[in-house]
Image 1 (cartoon, rainbow, N blue to C red):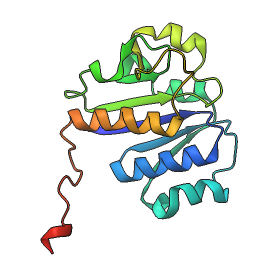
Image 2 (image 1 turned 45 degrees about the vertical axis):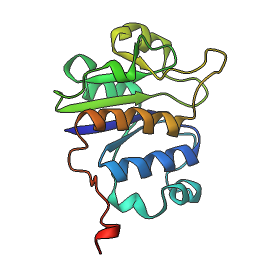
Image 3 (image 1 turned 180 degrees about the horizontal axis):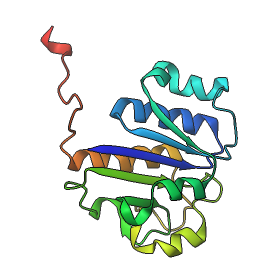
Length: 166
């Protein structure tokens, strides 16, 4: 199974660095959709991702429209993660999917409203108290990504530590 994490116009370099590290650790492909609120060569992004940048598959897209033209939502297992989501992220059955795309919007605004309305049945959310605005972006990515991987039995990931076997 191929997992794709799509960041649409991310603004905070530390979040993107943390997400890049999660993608490297899980084998997920990271899609960065421009404009970014920073340069991916910035030290703060690389510092948050530490030494994992060379173990990461990244695809850059010049705009959200260009991304949607290349990866058509109707033709792909694409889920739009938003606090306004129609379904809870863990209620989706990812087990039989060969490839999954999890899309996340910018930290200050989320995904565009017109896209959420158009793909309402593909919107998912992480439950939280209704008085709070949202979770941190990098935490949200990790939560949703690991649910997809859990349902896929953590295929191709090391499940047992070799620490005590030495």
